[in-house]
Image (tube, rainbow, N blue to C red; front, side, top):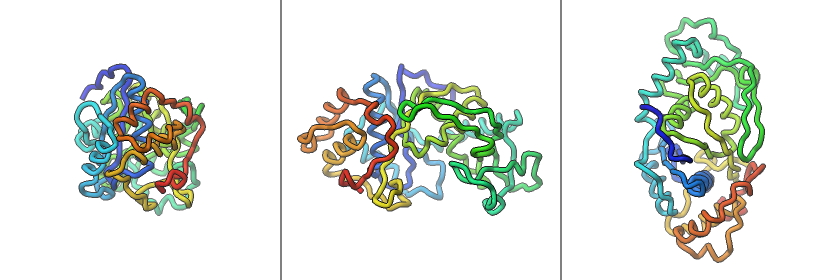
Length: 304
């Protein structure tokens, strides 16, 4: 699939179908949608269904129903990441053929004593010279040439992959494609010009840029927004018991999301339907209001 030609700006919302849309995911949807629309651009929805063991049946439809209830309007058909499997495998093969990736038989137990970095165990390069096992993952080879980029909200970023995260997995031992590889290929093929997502993925972005450079792909802009946390300081997620957002009375929740993103919506807006709220939100959208913000308390906005 050749890369799509973006119509100026093109952004996306790419949820995983692991449960209903919760307040934290709504923040990413709102910010990415507002960025696209205020740049007169396109906004696509892609369901990232490449990890079947974690997925909940029917949650993709529940997520789409929630987006509709909250007044989101996406461009083109909804796509499913699993349908791009051939492109993912092509990328893995290309990296292997060029010696930029290699098979690895190391298990989590093997890495239990490895030093830790921002993304977990720093791989010590055990299998760089080859491994005998047929039960392997595929790792992307790294070095310590610094990866530098400027995030639209979080400012200049710098990471040396080999020492801070090590060679990373692009295809798992069970044969499933890793998120890092899939998201890079799909964002390129769909012509994304800016990636708006939670700050919990900020430390993963150097890996994505590393893959883009290795595959000869353009590097899009990045904007990492604050994540919603619960009263225990944990990111809202299925694992931390985050509840799905209300699909019947959407107005107050949508206004709360805008407020959490620093947009200062007027109080009376909570009584309006989503279409009216968007009529206020888009002309008044100011992404800079989130600059430097790393997290927001969901309970302070009554949706924890």
